[in-house]
Image 1 (cartoon, helix red, strand yellow):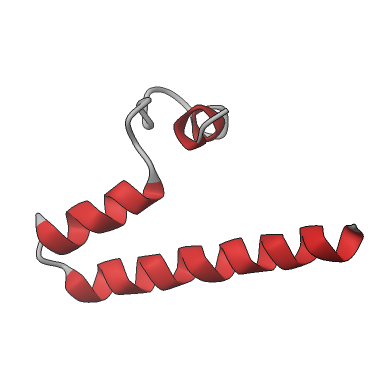
Image 2: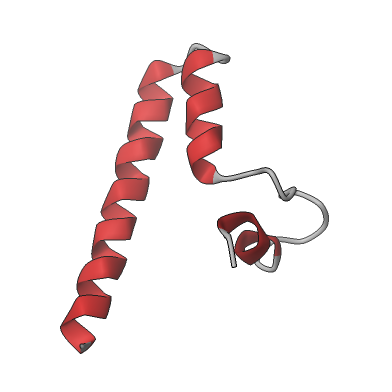
Length: 61
């Protein structure tokens, strides 16, 4: 499975298409939307969440 298909099950309606990922959202914010600070915070938040999940999964093994 890939990221958009997993996220589609979590939100109502057609909010997430097959081509949407949170990383693409951060990229669009920074380069198309000129919101560099918000994009940076979003990217760091995604990194922290990913590290927490990886740590939790590795501690179970």
